[in-house]
Length: 337
Image (cartoon, rainbow, N blue to C red; front, side, top):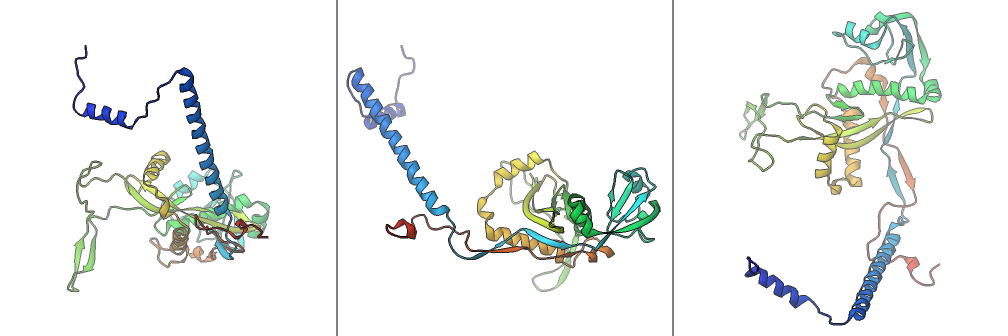
């Protein structure tokens, strides 16, 4: 005996189900034929829908025959004509950093044969001159770019990192981002509504508690970032600049890749990753990194030896635009040749 009789809302749900159902009475053969027919109709419906969608895709995938200019995320960089090499008296790279810890060391590459490479001369102004053994040699950069493009890219990269670091930008491998340092106690001189200047202290304001965090807590920080690479193509140096999103847990220090990927997957929005937005970010980072006169740390003399060009462009006979979903192309008409 059922101890829990059906009543109330359950009875209404059952009545609605029976009212919307179509009951077929028949023997086993008739029921099997009805089921087979229904299955066949469903399969035809799926095939027809797939065919229609394929037709729409084929119609819209072809580029529009309209001339346009493609802006690449690659820009040329003019590097010094010569780089310098020297044998070293140091046993390894940590020894150099340990002995020169309180001095500004220019960028350099430490080779396995205990030699040093740099675009900065090993003269008396260079602290690395203390480790020079013998006479430093000046070599043509163009020869290095042609004969050993990987080493050339590495040499350019270590110098580029220093330029970017002096902008106050942090690095996590090939990704560069602005830190959000805690400036809640920093006083600033600002004008009030009457135009009178006064010292104020700005603090991070949290509107209210949420189910994710209490008032005053921060789950993560979102940073505008950029990925930079320094490839060598056709015997010349270039920079590949790709805007990225970056996340930290404290606004400063790098976070594990898996954690960043999970946050990015949660908040990724494809509407913000359109061509116009990406080009705008590329131009923003180009100005910020290579054109702005402002440095957080005083620029070094050799910075002027590097010159940065504009993004490469390519003129093509087609446009990356797409036609409307219901728009018909000329060749869809019969007799069009």
